Length: 263
Image: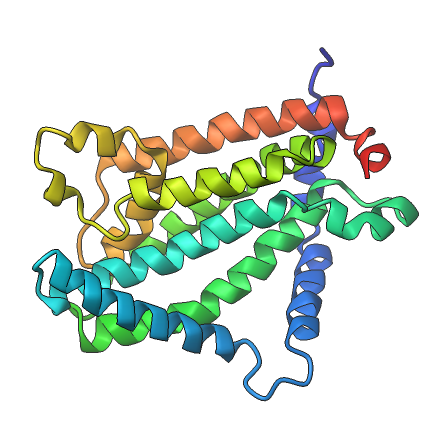
């Protein structure tokens, strides 16, 4: 296996060119909503209707007060939508830019960062729903909410490296895409988004804590709801970043030159 030269690693070269993938991501958003009156706000409206409807239904099913359940569900749904959309789109993260990859020489990770930035822009629009829910239904705002900023930065980093680990094998083996999509769907139901961990009781709480997605959600959601994430959650997030960063570096060092031939 080739040794990884971190001094010339494409991961770091790409990170130093935000003007490249940032502008391309903004171009994608503009093209998607070209000639639309509301533009990306359609996403916000759809997300708001979904959260309001399912939040009311599931609060009745779980016999919980709406002001207690809706903020929990709203934040979890918006954050998970960002994670799952990013991972699912990374399955075609290279194939959708086949023409560009064959004609120009850009760092391979720049295509994935383009997706990340695009989905972050969508997240920013959907976050308006969270602002409304917390302001008018939830506990209100406190200084603790600022902790969600480093939480989101860390989890976005983890999702970026995970996307690279998904994109490379999915480019080689196209049948992996439905597998990844089904795994993300399963992940939605086994992660505390629709349900709160306390509903399982102490007996199964350890299973919840073994799910990395639980902590990727918690370090963003908990501060917004007025509580600080546990040290265990921070440790899980940092460990997830290290794991996927190493895996992404290994995959890039071995297969970066073959990706164009797999398209």
